[in-house]
Figure 1 (tube, rainbow, N blue to C red):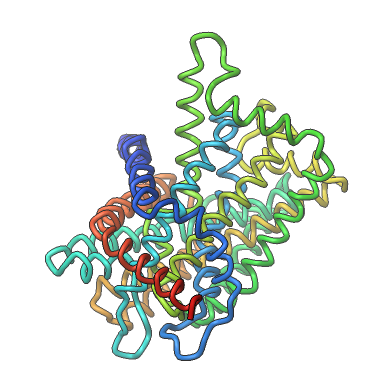
Figure 2: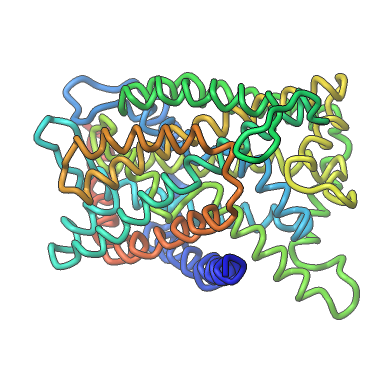
Length: 473
């Protein structure tokens, strides 16, 4: 019976994250790119300027634009940037990285649009805190008759946070990484719940649970405060390590770029197999790119809605940098190190082992230290994802319950409990359900973004005209 349920869920998961959803997300991104005249490229310097600007007094919101971006990045920069990229390249070849770039380019304008809408249609709760996201731009932008669609999105959002993406999978990733580094042979073990676990899993799980509890009980302000410190630190550490690999192996970079492009279009495939190779690379790369940066899924707008900003457009520009940082910078770094060192093409290696091998081969230091650096990055990436998804799912639950904060506070305890038991959860069906919910979040969100694209265009035009007038005055 359980096996049949697992097979059914796997089928649904493959369907949800299959070609139809990928095509839908890409199509919306291309449509918005045309409507906004390539804003994600032409206004990138402006986005960087807004990101670096100091917040101004008198702006509505709970946290700074930078803090909102870090909160969003805390959820998007996760194990997918290390493990997911490796999996895509192993399964789809180096060409998967090219299609990942394409997903990021069109996804950037989708992220801009959904975060703009989140700020425009956000509301102030009775106690003064700000709440916004797809559920509110569906209800307030599309009209009360569409409130049910906002509820559907919120329901999926709670499911994703509690059932796996925010809890079980991340804490499992952390404890597994720690265990593989400190006690790979499981020499120090203890029997619990009828199974044998390494003490490193138990200790790491307890420490992480305490750290998570200390942060999320403090709410958004504490989550964003922690994110502002950890996210830049972990991203810079990882990027610097990858840069060292690229600098040491600089002579191999041109060949790697050529291999990525050729592989993307099946140029190196055997006769008659080019199209099939290209499709696999396209599917794996685009799917992993979307899954990594979450553009179109509707999660980032929940964080963006709380930002102190002069305009919805200004926050949209800042938020779209999240996709650029996540995929164009961090995923590219991972992908290039894997292609340059050839670790993707070694039989028997998969997931984090592929990236670990790339770091050990590429860094001019001992393999043990290289593995430690990657383990540390994995731990921080997964930890911040836990924090980010707690915030997302809390806001979804707040909308579902009509603002009953007592229920939200009780949910925090449940969320912490799920983190605590995460290392001992081995039911793959739970993760598959969370994966399905994650994909289904995108559908109501994309419907709203397309329906409200006229608002996005009008707001953008008005803001740019205002800036133009200010320059001449």
